[in-house]
Length: 313
Image 1: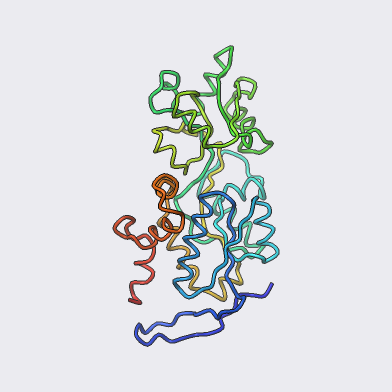
Image 2: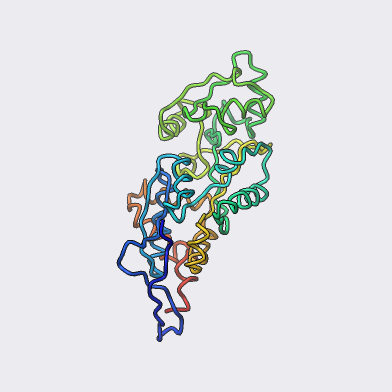
């Protein structure tokens, strides 16, 4: 892989500042992303932010975390938005209970050996979670996953729960490990599966099920008036979001750090739910959602462009 190089340096007389302008050749900054909505939206936001400081950008999709990471190792991509918990359980094999700040430090230190730099983390955390309706006679007494485990142990017939098949895989943040960690057993649960998370949310909305697997940044949690059972023993690894960049790319393009951090510090879990709602429910489109986040300061105060570009205007 050829390193990203600065080909031209132009002094902007009107602003008194210099910016990097990329030539019209193949020296693109390549942003990798996993093939689901949140990651695609993050890639679009990052693409526009870097274009605004003169970069040429390509987006590169991946179907799995391992394919994406292999592309980083082979220097086939330059940037991606990583989740600390994903690297922690797949590469470091960290076990619960987890402390979010400590996990970020562990992952950041681990990846320094590979010359991957974890930049400033956001407060967005996209974990698995167990969701119930906000008002339901069957689940009103359940506040935590520990409550659920105790109920499963007490009931001879067990507890019904609906999961995505991924949550039955052999992984440390899946159902069997979760049940054992909370002092129960997977056999104490009557498990049904749905092929998509959308189907689980629809079942919860329509009262077809009482407890279902969810993601903490999914807009349906708010849109369908669902609540999460608290992970009171920190069994789920926090999938805290942060931009990850090749060290060489950052060395050659120091301005990328501010541009990416500027996105990261403004993202949070509830905002991502809203952004996904704007795209998927309000139907304004993924690109329009990305630009709205970056430019519409009256909707998203200090949402990126103003703080980064104010001095240049």
